[in-house]
Length: 228
Image 1 (cartoon, rainbow, N blue to C red):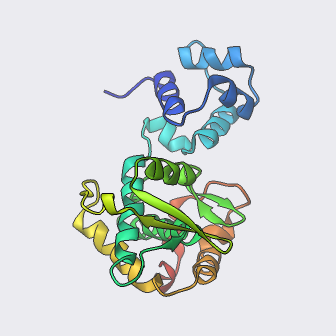
Image 2: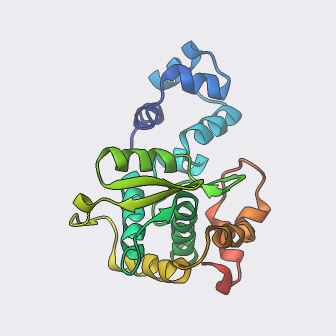
Image 3: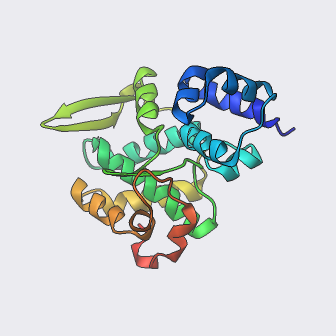
């Protein structure tokens, strides 16, 4: 059964760990008015809906269809990249480089299948396309004992913890893992600035404005040799 919009908004807000006051402040709405939205007593205007979607890290289309990104699958994608990188190295990936690898996986999958691997919404920020939940996902994986984050010079390095290496990745298909493996093979020995420059010069990043959520559909206009 599809949830009512107010129930969907309430459950998504809670899953993001945000208070009603925090969301209300971000969309420029009084808290009592926002509470009325979650109770189903007040309808959102188009501009309010757009702001709310941005705050919750989804698109208006996602809000209309009551669908949410597969956050747990996104976390498995993080682990899978760490495993591919550990095959013939120390398995440590700079945090910024890891974010770009995940972006390439999601957008490359969309290029082939017209759907993203995780459904996460990527925002155009100074350091590249990244979901707002990326840093939360790393924090949770570290708290769960699945990854370790170390510091080397000015770079934070992410690696899979020993206790996590026997865990199964149940949400990723063989075909998805194959693509992640191909992306890992291409970028494994490249420097972080190389993958940053690559993603910044792709159409999705070039076309969008600062802080805008990047539509997946833009990748379909990219040269096939420049997808990942």
